[in-house]
Length: 422
Image (spheres, rainbow, N blue to C red):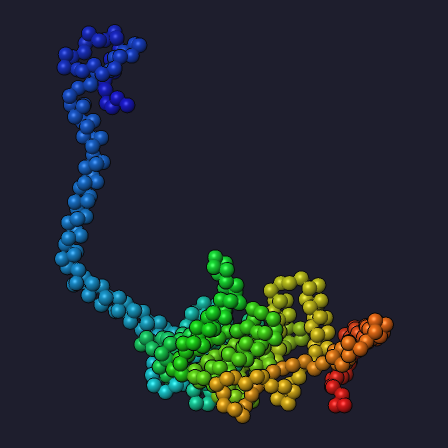
């Protein structure tokens, strides 16, 4: 509070020089200051303010000098940044054996032994498995990619987009050869996220992104779609995924990679001339599966979700229960396949008489057929109770048959119910 001072006991007050200035009196002593001490105190207390003023003056000087040379400095920075990027791309290309892609205006994407530029650098104790990519707006516009969980579908899709992007930015690409048709835009719908703050669910966010793609993609675009429709019910999701592929194929023939677990979509290859199926291979070894990471022509028929759940560490009891449920569902399912069983409604823009796509519909059971044939208006309460009892007994009998069929060691021959033509 009092700064610098000299404290003198009362016994020595007679020795205090005349130029000392009394500053404070205590019980047994007095405190004094001098002019020199007062000046030093002021200098120290004002030093912080003077430091700030000096720093700002120096900053202003540097700022003015930089502003005077701004154009030269910005040009130098841009040149250094470009050299840095080119040097980094060249270094990576040399280290990881990238190749110079052939850029063309043709609507194709042909990659031989393509690799994911990030994943291959992060693998430890495992070699990255390269894969070919072949897209052409003329005869191979849409690739429907199927395969198990964790097999590498998303990596395959992402590496296609990255190779196209790297080629167009002037970089070499991770492949043994690549011919890249220039894309006006690269659209992606990969991953799952929501937006709680604005009240948008994961499925709504997904649909909005798909809508943006369908409204703005052109025949020159590259489209990457991953598991479209998974956020809603099975039939809703499958129908949406089917319609999206059909739209991309018919309206614009955009080069498209479409990964899905809806294996029914593999039927599109037989119905649409520019759709092809590819799948990520696995090898079964008893209860285990080995991910081969290799993409081959053709569609997959299983997703091996329970195997992946076992790898994730789910309790054995849960895995065994899931396997029992899966066997029961597979035994009782009877999905209608083939165009003779039903058709999707025509798309408005499609010409009359053009090919329509079959919708996988389940046939009516005997109980459902009886319900539809009932004339409720003419039934008495007793008749209704009698019919209800009969239907309940039929359902009970079917449940018992199903439970018996799924017991270990029993083989069941499934019957398909068809409507009586009369």
